[in-house]
Image (cartoon, rainbow, N blue to C red; front, side):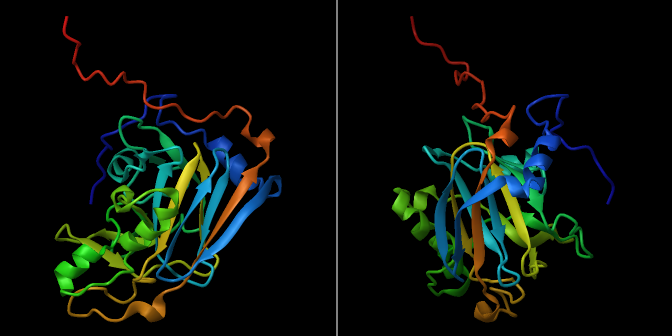
Amino acid sequence: MGSYPAAYQPGAGGALTVDRSFYRRIASAQDRRRQVESFVIPPRSGRAWEVPAGSVCRIVTVDGPQVGDLNVWNRHNPRERMWASRTRQLQRAHVSTHDRIWSTLPYLRPLLTITEDTLAGYGPDEHGGRVHDLLGTRCDPYVNRLLTGEDFDFHCHSNLTRAVLPYGLTELDVHDVLNVFQCTGLNDEDRYFMKACPAKRGDFLEFFAEIDLLCALSTCPGGDLSIPLWGPDAGDPSEVCRPLGVEVHRVDEALLAGWTPPEPAPYRNVHGMRMPD
């Protein structure tokens, strides 16, 4: 397949330009950060947590390959949340080091920047698969009922719904996800496929919080996706479900010199309308 220029091209020094030297400094200065939170999310479960602006968060495959579905909000305004489709356009359909997750309108700013990814060298594989997927979204009990006629309460949508309840959010706040460690692509029929997760024990995806964040992560009930969830070959994936670890680290203030949280988009939200005389 030939290469064709991306539609969204950054201008020199523009909003899409990333100061890679800054994020490399954040990633490499392991001795200049302090862990402030660490926990493990059990299989087929979910949890929400806060990541203050200027901090680093790491998601780890603590016990082998496992897919996780990640949601992200502005901690102080949940109407601002990750925008998967725009991130696909401004970054890539599968994100890695120095890619950003962008927020919804009318804010449109980076919520986080990926600083380190131990699977950065994976893909495209022989089927065109890549990891850390923004093409698809979370599994949910509504689609499961549609496909199987049965109810199942531990899909990622449900896990995320339960996870955010302590923060005053509901099912209506759960949104399209970053499928961390998930290997996906489009086949010759332009249809979405999922492959077995290539992560090994100890692999991780790490990101820098550009603003105060609320994050929620589901350990997918499909586990490492080596067993199909639907269709003629569907089986019980419970044996390939594993936990995921989460770490939050405070960064030495000196490392943040020159960095400031990004402002919302400067468009004035007028949309061509004027108040009547």
